[in-house]
Length: 169
Image (tube, rainbow, N blue to C red; front, top):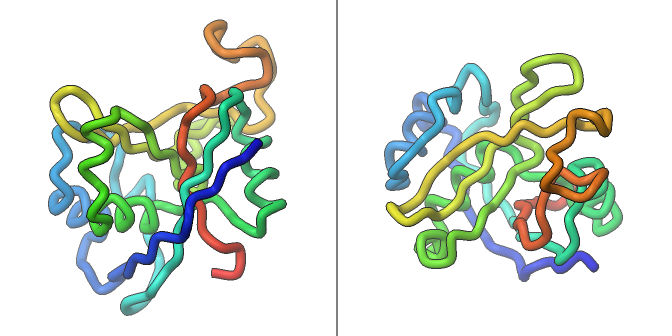
């Protein structure tokens, strides 16, 4: 069963120059994948925008496609790059990541590297602090390419958090 948090309110500031680089620099990451760039994860928007964000999770392993469908049933969509970066920067609970080592994935922050193969942006806690990294996920991926560690048809372990926003935003 999909669990959804109460709304977190954030303000996305699109007036920042080099949004991705600036947000990463100001958010105290101890490790950032070198492919997390404005070119791979473009941010488009104007001014300052208020946004409600939610964390969704479930106990069972799931695929990216299944999670997107479940969010859709709740009138939510996967969060994008600007929403993930802003969420981690602005929420007072952000130290939670370092303490729990939990992971937050933004399935709407996509970098297509080959037909069907994409990398999505994720933030997690680690023993040295907070890291931003990429996960390769295959939307409608053939079973022969899936990790043998995950149940067939899954991209994500149970307990992974997915950042989501209302569909109308």
